[in-house]
Image (tube, rainbow, N blue to C red; front, top):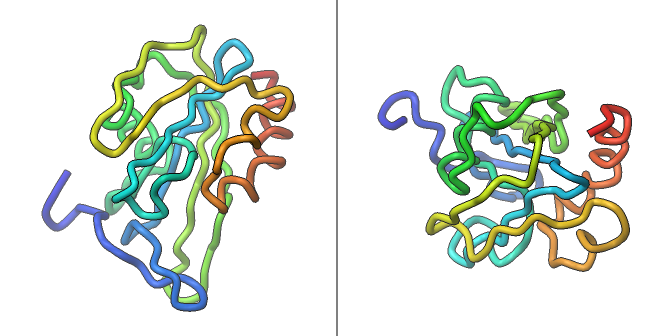
Length: 159
């Protein structure tokens, strides 16, 4: 989507931090067969050369789930029809001013789906959720902070 509805752009965060997404951002924590789909972000992206979940800026009026599914299709080639959304959790924000938030959408798939990286990714990888394989990666700081709560939510949902 582009033009007047596009969420592409910088929002002001705490302590002068710039946050991507005029209307907030969302990402997909996709779990299948005990693995989570992670993205090694291209160096040129915001907080690049780190690992996180596929995601990006929300468009004006777009739900977090729709944004996460759209971004995951764009960045990984995963069709929304292959994914079952289970819950959305605000994992960063809201911040003073415009109330910017990052929402992580928890979802499941029946199997580890094939993925195709676009230019925003150095690599896509299904990583075992149990153990410390995820923590061994250079994680996006906000994702690292949210990970314990996301794991708890995945366990509660039985994903």
